[in-house]
Image 1 (tube, helix red, strand yellow):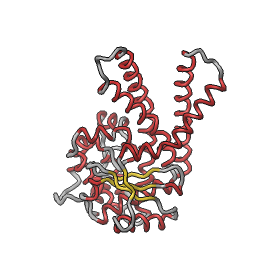
Image 2: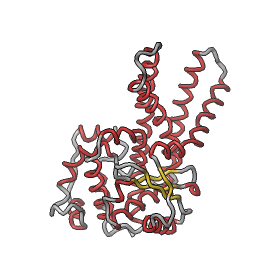
Image 3: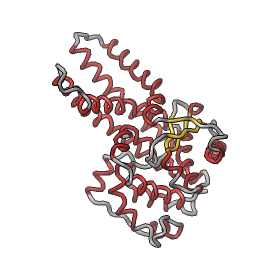
Image 4: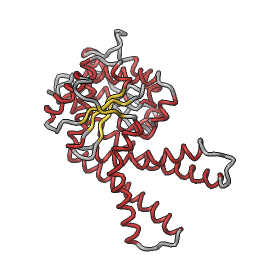
Length: 324
């Protein structure tokens, strides 16, 4: 698939999301006695417009992001700046998210509004080359301009998830009308699952393009493969509460931290010399093998924001020595 094909699919998914939002608006308005088609359409467009405006702020709030200056994180800032120049995009804002989950992500409304963020956890986990590969992956998302569509797609599941968690787990059960509150929470969770499937699919197809983009920006495939390998292990050690806090934002991450425990067994076989890294020869060895994923692995991939990790690293191995 070409970059044009990627963009067409992403915007098609935004159209599907609009249809879902439209259906929700129609159902609510109809129950209130409003039957005007133009009212439904205008309200749905307003809702998407609000998503467009508040999407980045909602991500900043959810991830506890603090934007940093060149003097605070000189190496991080210089790496992002160099990658932005190589990708020929405006310099994005650089941020650090206050979470122990090792990861990185990019978001924004347009190319000049790009933001590249790392978590506190990743800064203590990867070496310079591995971190550069991850940042190149995120800059590629900005270059491919898929961050706007994934931001639009992600807002609805984020809001629905927060509503569901608040009403189902943190409501005052002694309060009158708590039964209605529970119904709202259940409905929010159902719609979260439906809309999140759209985000999952959109996120998976864009990850392969960003991986290739990282290699095209000068990162060795084995450095990105090693970074992914280490992120899986780092995520597996993360507490469940931290994972729950970022549930609606996983589509932005380099890998899906919720799948880490299931991915460890698969990835362990790649590190042949038990060094904790995947070098060029180990990646070449993987390229020579054929992968067979079971039904459970395929189902888990469908329900994940990212491609199966072993399949993804296998795809990276095809770039070894071929992409400059």
